[in-house]
Amino acid sequence: MNTTKIFKQSICFVFLLLIITAFKPLDRPVLYIIGDSTVQNSDGNGRNEYWGWGSLLYPYLDSNKLAIRNHAKAGTSTRTFILDGRWDKILATLKKGDFVLMQFGHNDHAGVDDTTKQKGSLLGIGEETKEIISIRTHQKELVHTYGWYLSKFVKEAKQKGAVPIICSLVPRNKWEKGQVVKEAEYPEWAEAVAKKEGAYFINLNRIIAKHWVEMGPEAVQTFFPVDGTHTNLKGAELNAKCVMEGLKGIKECPLNTYLKPNK
Image (cartoon, rainbow, N blue to C red):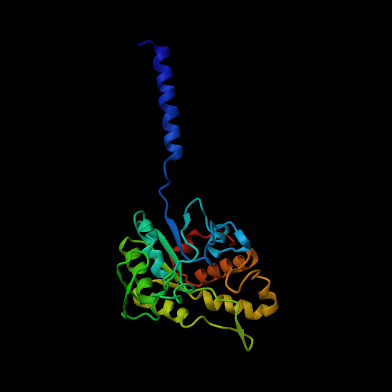
């Protein structure tokens, strides 16, 4: 074989190696974000003026060291996020050193055995169950409590070696006597599950509410162009900032090591 042909083959091999290296997945931790439309609406593109806070965490985190995957989906509850196979999809790739940041509740209070959506879970954090006939499968389904499903996320994330972080649900734009109305006992239930299962906890509901009270109802109203649940970009930016505020308050949480300087 002549030297010219050998040289050309060597160049082709090196070029091919460079291409493979360029497209090889980086061996870095992944932050998986799960939740409902207040975390990501549509594809996180602000359609209908709605924005979720998960899409706006990127400026705070070093994407060179941490991959960010927002799997939140509009209309989901703890129960339907599992039923739809979204959680199994994450578990298939979840690994040691990854993070799961979760926020549910707004859809968990919906109907459990209604004839249209059946997306709710039972109230509370206990072991209560209710057997229904699923409109999805037309088979029997055993529905659990909000806390049971939340615990499932935490336990299975920890089994994979990942770090679970629970956020209480963002508040709705509801006021009473100058204070933001709390959504049932969901913040307390989320905190109780975090303590029981050994997950980190961000009381996002109360952190946001505190900022809202300081701003006043009229200013907060500008965050909600359509309804009292879904924020516009400005409102979602504040929510994302509050997530980071809560995270920084947990000094021992390893996700803090991926924050950008001065963020």
